[in-house]
Length: 112
Image (cartoon, rainbow, N blue to C red; front, side, top):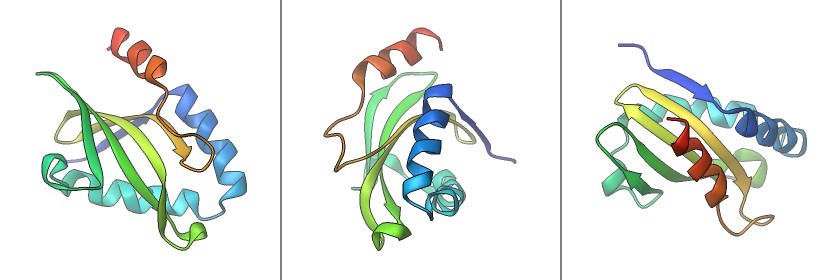
């Protein structure tokens, strides 16, 4: 079974901006995608379920960046639609921004 990854425009914009500053980010995201299907979100301290419904979950993940010496200071907000379909909503550096963009998550949920 193939895993499907999508990203919102806002995520792609965030990612492009951060990838210029943190050179390993592109490869780090590829590694993150490899392990994502095998993670139990409710049992892992690096993941927090922000919303859980019958059709999807919104998850906040701590994300390690090798450029930052594997410091998990990045955060990724994503939606999981089933065991093999994910959509990235937001990525940010914890040092620049304290919390996720709640309005962006609400806007995403309206369009699901």
